[in-house]
Image 1 (tube, rainbow, N blue to C red):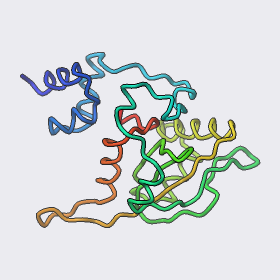
Image 2 (cartoon, helix red, strand yellow; image 1 turned 120 degrees about the horizontal axis):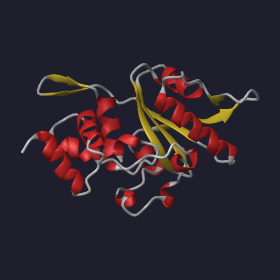
Image 3 (cartoon, one colour; image 1 turned 180 degrees about the vertical axis):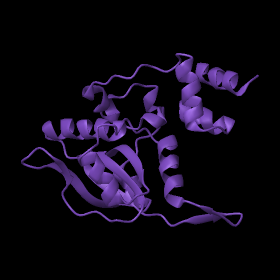
Amino acid sequence: MSTSDAIRSLASEGLPVAEIARRLGVSYQHAYNVLKAAGRLAPRSSNVAAVTATPLQASTAENARPVLSTAVLLGGGFQRSGEWVLTCEGELVPDQPLSKARGVYAFVKDAAALYVGLATMGLSKRLYFYGRPGATQRTSLRINAAIKAELAGSATIEIYTATPPALAWNGLPVAGDAGLELGLIQTFYLPWNMRGL
């Protein structure tokens, strides 16, 4: 059985792309591309309403993973670093200055994380691009629209950040922040993270 056949087989068992990639030891992108080419991925709506669903509105299949709560984030070393606000000009900005250090960030509504990401260029710079996404930055454009939709509905979207240290495995360097981001995406239900679905 080829790797592509194994990917399709695991997908037919209902496993998410991230879990298939982990089990087979292949990249997420490879597994995703195989399933996309086979027409095996559920169509995604570009409608912001679909992106802004809260964890409580998720389907039973999506809700098989637990919600990432603020209690878990705080207990794991995250700190509340601010919240998103709209300026008078309609620009999306954090209400407080953010760290320039690398790290992991979470966008939280009603004590449940909706999105987790990795800021290798620094938290301040990465979150800047959510407020002012470029025309080709699909993820930043999608998350920008989702946050603005939530704020328009009077929701509060909080920003939590963590800067885990670099680690080592058998004497080799391991990026602690990258591992934390991936672990959270694979473990918890995060409705705005497409990679974890």
